[in-house]
Length: 175
Image (cartoon, rainbow, N blue to C red; front, side, top):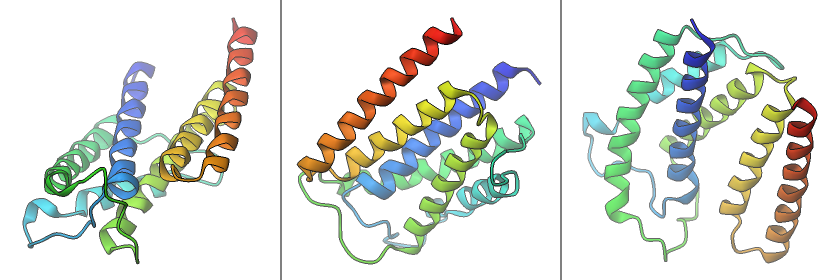
């Protein structure tokens, strides 16, 4: 398969990670199904996380066959769409995120998000642009999650600034 197909799948995994991040870190509603509808399952997301876990070692990821990964992403996309439609009517930006223990669904989504991060990190860990880009994404997630701590936000903003300078230097070096 071509490198373009793998890049498209990596981009789709990043989009999936963003949706999972919204559901577990930003949605101002508890992830619990009001009723047991088939559309509010997590089985396909769990399958995606399991497949990614099998392909990740401590420092390197084995590429998943594109057709297999596409099927898993399409299934996860359908499930996440159902959860987003279920959550968004109850999502209130003015309200704080519900406190308390994580629900089993939140645990599942957090594990899948972690597996996506590990898989993407292991695809090309020696490429500086990739490593720096992933670090910036993670720090931006922290900024979103800890929005009420001004001192922490300032430190994270400085970290992002430094990483962006490093990214610019790495781009200049490769050009």
